[in-house]
Amino acid sequence: MDRLLKAARTSGSLNLSNRSLRDVPPEVYRSLDAVGEGEKWWEVVELQKLILAHNNIESLKEDLRNLLQLIVLNVSHNKLTDLPAAIGQLPMLKSLDISFNSIVKIPEEIGSAASLVKFDCSGNQLKELPSSLGRCSDLLELKASNNLITHLPEELANCLKLTKLDVEGNKLTVLSENLVSSCALLTELNAAKNLLSHMPDNIGSLSRLIRLDLHQNRISSIPPSITGCCSLLEFYMGNNALSTLPEELGELSHLGTLDLHSNQLKEYPVGACKLRLSFALLCKMTTLRKLLLSGNPLRTLRSSLVSGPTSALLKYLRSRLSEAQDAEASSPTKQDVVVMAARLSLSSKELSLEGLGLSAVPSEVWESGEITKVDLSQNSIEELPVEFSSCTSLKTLILSRNKMKDWPGPILKSLPNLSCLKLDNNPLRQVREET
Image (cartoon, rainbow, N blue to C red):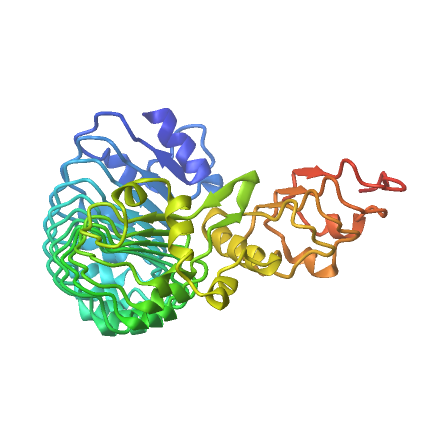
């Protein structure tokens, strides 16, 4: 233990997970006061990352307030029943994981942890979330699944930067329209396994939503405004009470997975058949569309079609479209594939545009945020544009089998994290030693 604490005073990081601890060692709360023999006090750094996961810890002391530079705190998988008020006295705290404990209430003081970006309180015994969470204006990810929560605080609508909200497995009866309209940056919303009877009428205001999971609720209809969710790739509505579907579903041109199993559907609207069959996407994979309709009393579809392969089902449904409608549901354009791949890269940080016949690097590459891997192999690219220099987080760049003649030295020099570069099978004239 002494060795770990000594190392932590140098690195600022302490990992005490899986050590059968019943209490947090007192030295942890006063790491700067415990400088030992042979240590230089001017080289000691304050604790920034503390991992106490998978122990038997029953409580955290108010002395936690001493860790003023703490950025990451993980006390998941312990035996905590509450949190100290001192949690709100950690001004630098960005990531807090208290999942899988027995916590019944989160102190209102958490709202004073103004730097909080990620908060995971899943797998506890919470009946509510504190309204003070609305003061955490930098909050990006909130996970509160598998609790006993009956409602979400209206103040949560003040978390305008929220991109991921997971409240699966609770007792929610409604999703606030105010919350939906305010959190316009949401890319993932999971409210599955609750008691919801309807979807918010303004669900379409979530234009950046990529994944929407509302399976195993009591929802009886999907509002026409769903067309506003134009980025939606995955939509899970299985095990609900749907009896009809809006024609507007067919306008979700990027939808890859639509789960409607175990509802009360008797017919499937022809207009919703405009969904395209497949996309050639990331990492040499072909992502086939999934349409799950089993467990519905469908009158117009043979059971063999409903329970059979998705491709056969979609082929039959599309055969009922008029010729003009069928043309609209044709294979995706090259730009469609690029746009969808870029959206998927928001979470994976990896972008694959392999074998698309590209003659130039699309702008989506340097507009995709902190991308770490880009695969542009098997295209007809001749050069890297100047804008590519902005991909400073890039670690892997694959340009195999293109038409590059000149070594992209200046661009490569501007990529400080690049550790893997593949340029094989290009007609390069020379490779400069200085790069």
